[in-house]
Image 1 (spheres, one colour):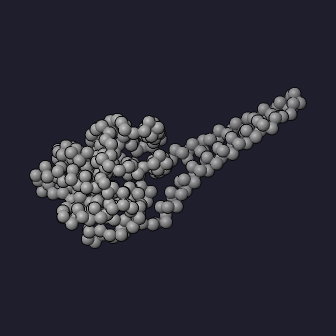
Image 2 (cartoon, helix red, strand yellow; image 1 turned 90 degrees about the vertical axis):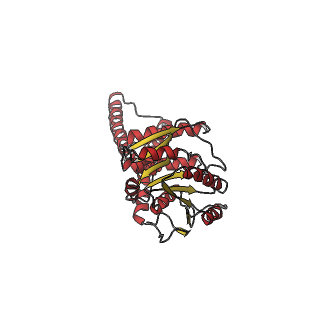
Image 3 (cartoon, rainbow, N blue to C red; image 1 turned 180 degrees about the horizontal axis):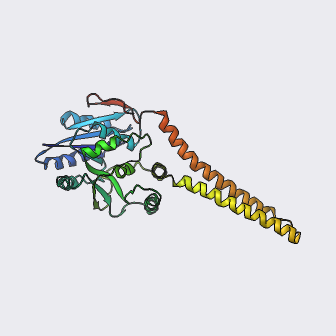
Length: 316
């Protein structure tokens, strides 16, 4: 009998968690030869999410929970769930039911063919999503796929069902600054993509702000490409050559025509341009240094406050 682990990341999902449990239970009951475990990871919720999950665990032994000491972010929550999963197959899902549980049946059947190691999902459309956010999301995927050797599929969700071998490979990536969409692709393995229409949250509000998504996108670019560093070097070379040429032009003009350079507004504009470009390049370098700094400090990715899973430890 196969065991399927469902990792559910929760942050202020007191309205969604019971609805998700009901839906996933209905789907689990359709699996005749599979055992389920449902691992809720409470990522420092401020509402009654933990209480609701505890109540579910009290009435259903399949329900496990991990509760963080504070909000560490979805990346940490996914990592905690994957580390404590014991299934032969492991799925990552959101509690808001934007990841349709009924797809699990098709995912499982496809994995049984042994042709794939992972069945992942992506949105066909961005319906119900703000236009500006959709535009920047598409732009991000185009940029990262141009400058990185790791291909990140446009519209990819974290929702996927993976074999134990693939999960173990993901867990072997011990990065502090985690970008799971990149990690899933970087470890390789055969992946089949299932497309579905974008679904609205069943309850509550999204926890992702535009600024939060922007920082997440920057994390992905920095984690999987050094092209920004190459660009900053290229900018430096181009402007040095340009400055050298202009110096020769000014000298020649002065010697030939006796016409000194005048016009402080143009000089100020050039100084502001170069100053801004220098700060931009320093900022790029600073981002890479900051990520390196966080990696070498060796802080735990998350801290568990309470759980009903035995022998859990702080994970680094």
